[in-house]
Length: 292
Image (cartoon, rainbow, N blue to C red; front, side, top):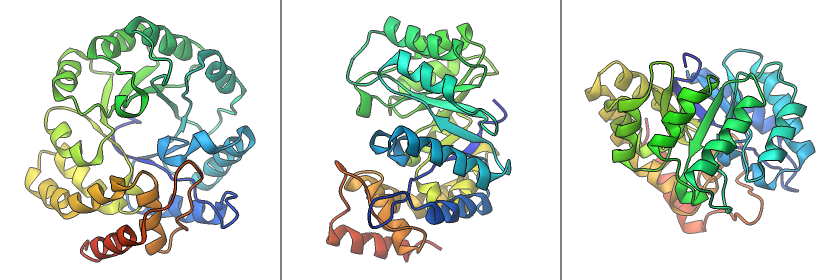
């Protein structure tokens, strides 16, 4: 749990004009986020567009992240999907040196029962000694991990150490916090809700906005974890409109546009995602100019 608290960053995968991976830009973003004081990095999460990367490209991204992070902060690697056996095979083939944990999203499209979700994650956890963060984002997967299932997994699998919660269901989140043991971490999966989630007992976030504003968002999270809500609210409201704009025309399209404006990478995304509209690009420029 101590590895996965505070501010984690769901890294983008930058692309060149020909849509090959832009490793120079990825290095800039890795260094930018670490210099901004984040606590850990996540490669190949949803923000990293892993659904559009080949198996070899994923291996290259992981190897590059390990080399450039160079143990400065923990590295978590995305290992999710809707084919349990394939996920386990991918984990078994993974070079685990330099990897501190795995992030595994709830299986999408299949729409499994809670028992199916439990057995899916139990099989993944049993296939590795690495710590596993389960990821609940029913708005993307149509498969909600209930609080009962999350707690059952935490109690049954010693290496399931956290849940990234992006359901927006505060009743469910509160039930999980109420019932969890001290070694299981609750992490926000929604930047805009991170402050209220910490206020009721979560331990941190895996963030999108921290790609561009690691210092500001880390300051928000650290202040909230210390109970300094006046400071945390200052950062919350400074970033709020910008956070909303990042997701208004799809993620990571909005984020990549912002990173391009900041000179960190180009805004290219792979289909079926498309870049933001010209009008929204201008709006992001305006919002970025207001963040000090």
